[in-house]
Image 1 (cartoon, rainbow over the protein chains, first blue to last red):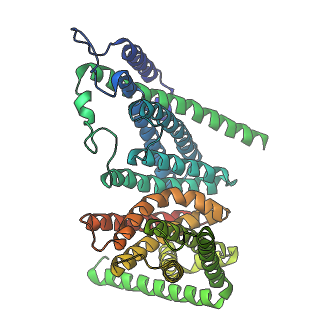
Image 2: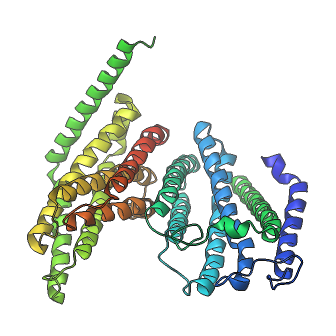
Image 3: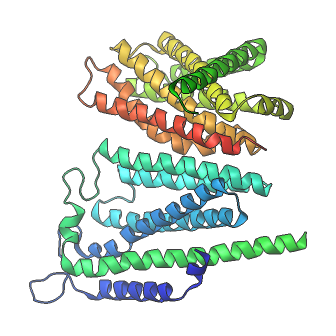
Length: 235
Length: 236
């Protein structure tokens, strides 16, 4: 993993995908009867359909980072090693950052389409609980001084929380209606994702945001491990 | 060699150890009366606070069943956190070392889960009784009321036993257990409140079975995770 994170090729691909998606996503017009590349022009959504290239991939990036954090925690419990703990913490922190970005982009979108920044929607509640869980994880980390103890307890909480959280986000949307596409009479995601113009930009945007999130995490993790080494040096 | 008989013997030995330890824990719990008395006082004073504030606002007479159940589950939640956290925080370093040499982590955590479930169940049944006594009984189906109360309370105690183990190991206090546990308790809370409110209607709805299985699932997951993960944090 460490050697993969140091390589350049995926960062260049990620940046170019993201530039392509951002520039293209703003440049392509909505459908207005004319021929050529255009995004679907749907009632209510209107121009805000372009947010699909930001909001949704940010959640994907968050889930990706939290999954990586979970895997590092599992491997920490299997064979404790300091770098695994640093990785798990770093991925969780940047995951929370992307979750917050996802919440804010979603709130702007919700305001323009549903009329309110926050609605009592199972997916919104799921996202809020997820954020609370990972902030609690970071609080737990900061409350322990001893390094080995912190690694062990934080890893076990991370695993416990991740499994509970996954169970939760799979179960809760089935209990009540959601305003999100594909739930409660709303058009399913694929009915406008199927639109080829949007798809050309959505997939690169997803990969691009995931690559960027990984890049930010790798820098953050390197910073943290350098700081740890400095601390050790001082002692 | 793994034969049927060996497995049987192992299970029996495990069950016997767990039973012995549960008995010891309960004996200690009732010998050290201040712990259980403190929890009882916690329940009584919280319920009295609720009663007093509702009475003072003049809304006790026509209290909505939904408000009843929300107040009830919040009190049960806080009582469970306190009860489970106490069961770990009163273990001194020496006592832990003693158990460590004596028991396997699985025996220890299983007994803790059982004892905490018993104590929490006792406390929440008591809370329910006092609630019915002072705020009226909104339930029309007693079995739904009791079933959801038991499943909810046991689920909370299973979840918070593990969370308390983490919180007390990290040297934190009850508020750390609350911070760590409440986001995780929300899913179960939302389902249990749903199940519980079924008892306010004359008949259960079609979704009842479905929600019941989900609630049981949320009891099972923390149980399984606690059994798997506790051996890793057991040693200091």
